[in-house]
Image (cartoon, rainbow, N blue to C red):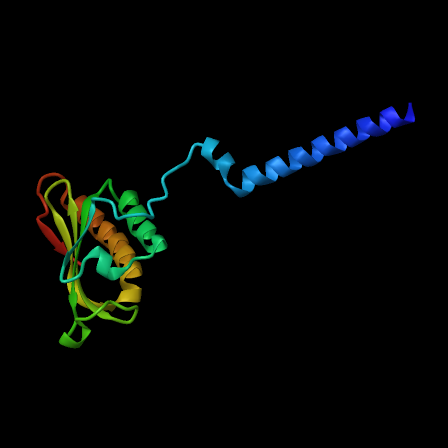
Length: 165
């Protein structure tokens, strides 16, 4: 009788270890994540609303996934006002016309487009590559404030063609 209960205990211990090992494999390989409803992360590529033109392309900038996500999320947050964000990037000097590093100076032009064919433009300025994304995000917020302010001031009776920030 004692041998039978010892065998049952060993089988139970084996099954518990097998279940724990299986759970560990499922969570470590993220198979469990396969069954969850995933939300988009927006960190793979820029959304079509964000365009880059000029001497540098998106690939030249080597944006990190976090930077791509910041630009995409900012454009999504402000999509009720701005339908497009245009970045024009050129070398700030002839010396800067090589590969883009974090301290490379870039001449930046920003244009935020609305559904009403209006634009909020930022005066061209020089920014370092590492400051590019934070500058664009800040400018987008300031452009929203400026546009909504003037929109309230003039109402629907007149249209806005272009504002400068």
